[in-house]
Length: 190
Image (cartoon, rainbow, N blue to C red):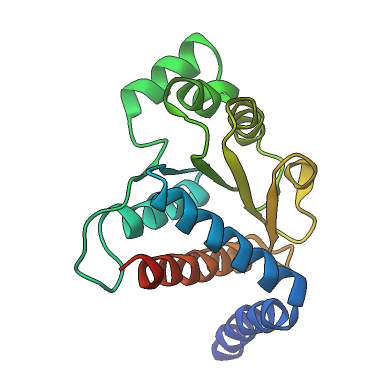
């Protein structure tokens, strides 16, 4: 069992080393960070969405902005879109789960806001619909996915592809990348 533990840790390290060595990926992370800084400076908000573990990661990252990261500071306007269970269950029941994020984007999204979708496959229909709606509004769209990017790669403004096809390793890297962005945004703004 100890060897299995070591193998899992090594797989996580390997994924992060591939991320570290990918100049294009690092450039995308830098660009997204700059776009988020600009959005907050312009009075816009950052909205997150995901499913399952990626919803938990979306909520985690939104709270880093709206609460705090390292610095005791003013909150930044950020929210995970799945946190209102009455809304989620009503829309899922009345329209279908594939519309739970696009409807709230249509109701609350503004030009210049940033939508960040987390999907290890890049194929989550409810996030794809949210991206399409956000683009109609004039929002900036970002997705954090796995190696292929799935269907989201072709429709989002910016795709952060973690170089792995293993869901746990992708999610671990999503949190790492999210923390990098949160730290750099906070340092620049405060």
